Length: 348
Ligand SMILES: Cc1cc2nc3c(=O)[nH]c(=O)nc-3n(C[C@H](O)[C@H](O)[C@H](O)COP(=O)(O)O)c2cc1C
Image (cartoon, rainbow, N blue to C red; front, top):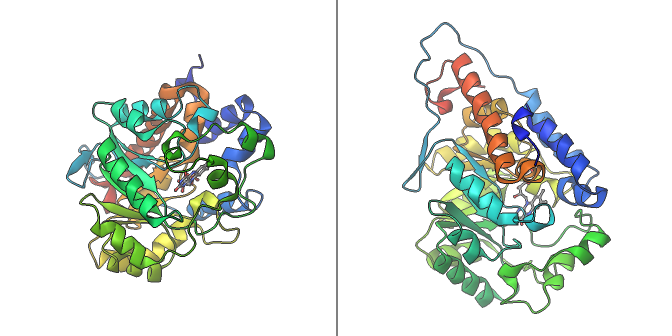
């Protein structure tokens, strides 16, 4: 077993994960549609922003807690939905769920998980699980899936709206396609899971905000839309009745030249704040100061995708926990330097 407590940054975790994974798997999990350029753009846009220190204040009492959807979370951090965790760890999503439970943070379960959602949810006692879902060609099947996820005990839904089609450069190698275990969560709907996963022909490119509205009307649970990059789409989402907006460019896996998410946050945040709706973001977050920058720009919660995979690859449950400890310690130190009792008070 690895000792991941010695690793000091998320970059070191990714390096270690790269050593452990086959090049095929590394490409599949860490690639984007543009030779890594979108991933780099997300990170670079965060690096370009700096935090202003405000020192010699009493910063003894610092608080990272966040209250959201009638729950209290110790940190404003969560796990983005990513597919196929069994490909990188034998316990797959069960390990991720345990780590999230231990940290007290939300875990958004991908619709393309290898472990059935019912088993993920019941594997923890205090887990806060949201189900990621997207519109598939048979609309009734989408709603059936929603009801099934509700019965499994999830606390809300994340609709991924940035996948009307599958980008042809989506990083799935041919070898991986053949090896990819069938996604249990979808077995009840598709006899041929390959169809959905590999060529995307089961995705529904016809959906509109009206479908989001209908979805929201059919559940009492919170509905968050993931994949917003413009103020116009944020307003359309809000008008569809959603409970929160999630700024995301899908980690660069859907579009080759889209804006980096933190730049989208800068322009979307003032608009969304007018409606008092929670704002989430992911994409390139790799340090506590990245998190603080997002909070300072108006995000309520910050999510991570690939760093969770790195933690899982390097040291399973403990690897994910150590990854988030690196983030929270760095966030805490930066909050103290920026004289902020609440992370959301920092200015960037
Ligand atoms: C390997 C991989 C699989 C992903 N699978 C999904 C998915 O099933 N559903 C989804 O909404 N987003 C998916 N995403 C996008 C992530 O939810 C998230 O938006 C992105 O990874 C955030 O960027 P980061 O990896 O730089 O943190 C995936 C991303 C990766 C890297």
